[in-house]
Image (cartoon, rainbow, N blue to C red; front, side, top):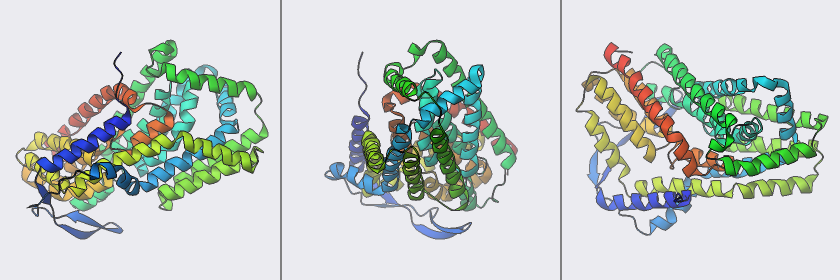
Length: 461
């Protein structure tokens, strides 16, 4: 069987490809201006301001791009290291294994309810307050749970990462996509909520059904999982931990209470206090230290456990830097705006349903180069909103096309630090994730194209 290329080979190959494009494509730039969007001031692109400039072909920067990627995505990298170490402390307390054992006993034959309940919660969080990076640590909880329930690590990742990603993409009030895009497009804040709720509900239901069908097949025949051999080692570790930690003690209960407090703190911090990566990293570090002390591990053992967890997750931090390096090459070569201009020019020649669907496809392609939803909003909405007026579709429809195009493929592209980081936390090789997940992406694309038909035909506003 031919071995798939390592994710680092894929990432570095894309860096080289980006550098080649800086020699092929002409340089270009849009003028920017400062505008107030809601409570904040953002820099947006001025429509019609694109002009060619000399490109800056990249050669030596191929090898410095990963380092620049570390600087660009430093908060995510620090987050991965600290969360990996903190959760390793919690794992070493034995509380997770004991808690999962208790949960399995309580649910007995109703364990199938876990998947739809957990996925609905994470999808709601994604749709309501834009949970994305915040879902990363949950892979360290839900993957072991899924394996203990007789599923595989893919199911564990789907319960948090995929569910939150679906909610983020089809978000009904996502502040990082919907609200920013509506503000830039001049659309009333949170307008069109009813139809967005319908889209979110349909996509979430389809995703849950897909994952539950897959989970049932794996439970019936675990060897059908592409993660079977890799999960065997983790399954053995969980069984060993359960055997060594048979009783559910008060210390286990306290550790799980601390975990619950951390999760509640995450929700409150993100939704009301404006917390992001650095604050969340501090929150989970406090969780890890507190759980280790409650479990009577002692300071030295807590420190060694933290280092071991950070060491295990080093590959995740490295690949995030490489992913960021791809974008650095395109920006330094001054061709990112050229790519944006070329794609936006195509949509201006279409009308009606095709215009809306082409804008979705444009955002989908751009998502590879600009995986940040909010960044893509300020770059593309000033261009696409006027195009909507010329193409016979409403600006509300363009916002929907943008949010669908900016969300779904973020779960599979190698330039997304959240995706490659989550896969590393879950110990799922990136190439195996792509192999499993791409059919789901086809379904998401079809649902998105269908979802844009009624808004384009009805003049949805």
